[in-house]
Amino acid sequence: MKLGIDSLVSQLSEARPGLKYTSPAIAAIAALNKLRAKRIALLTPYEVTCHQLFPPFFAANGFEIVADGTFDKHTDVEIGEITQESIFIAAKKLAEMSSPDALFVSCTATPIVPHIARLEKELGIPVVSSSQAMAWDALRLAEYRKPIHGFGQLLAAPR
Image 1 (cartoon, rainbow, N blue to C red):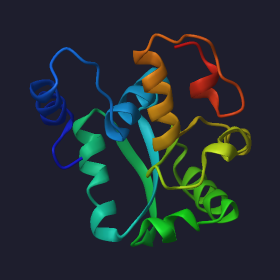
Image 2: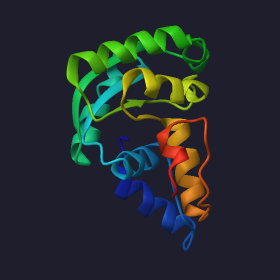
Image 3: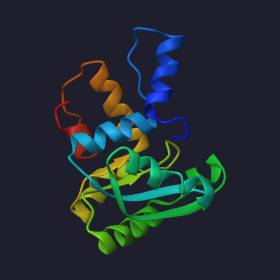
């Protein structure tokens, strides 16, 4: 995120020309654009200093962060231990306070993917996670078009 998408892709292209690239940040932006979501509720597991990098990044890519929260965790082990119940409670609070177009749950270590479809149903909005967006973007880049059900609207829609 600190590098920015253009800088990251430039560096990757220089190192390995001719390939297609994605990253959690690239995939998140592409996924949210695919869903036509502009007003985003943001939930991260990160410590506050890291969490604060997200709103400017999303703003620079055309999104408005209308609500945000963090679990203020410092290690991947701590992040992996965040409960599904805690994620749902935090997500509901963010959605209720801001009426976003979508919820973005950051970090590939956040244990959310198996629960995305249920959370979308409860919130009534699309939910995008870093891991889910990466899977979607990799499949899109590989030109795999079939829907994948059970992991939210993003993967269920044709790519």
